[in-house]
Amino acid sequence: MLGEKIGSLKATCTNKPLPAEGSLPSFETTAEGDGTLAGVEVQTMATYWAKMRTDGSLIGECPNQGVIMAQDGVGTFRATGVGNFTSDGGAAFRGAVYFETSAPSLSRLNGIATVYEWDVDAEGNATWEIWEWK
Image: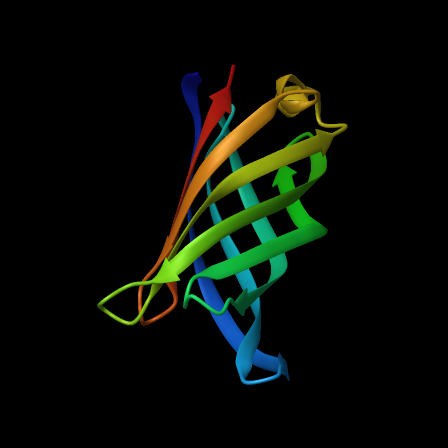
């Protein structure tokens, strides 16, 4: 069951192609932005990969290459998700994200599972909405 919404961030993304697997493309995305997480103003940056599957959907992962920075410390995150290209040329992913932090203000993120919606438009503007998964 979904618990409370614990995050809302906006980011700007840039993409670059990675080596394809056969005829299916793969991408690397770098994102930087800011917003609120666990009631705290944060900045974030991350690098993740996504690859197209044979059915045209996408699968992606941020393998502990995400950083969250708060006034009183930092944290990292890892995420996985599945998605699709959108009709406007962007992409929409849904998945799970796990945080690890030493920042006292973000400590409630340690040891909990969260789920997210990551939506990116064709210009690389992204929104990241995060809920605790209970």
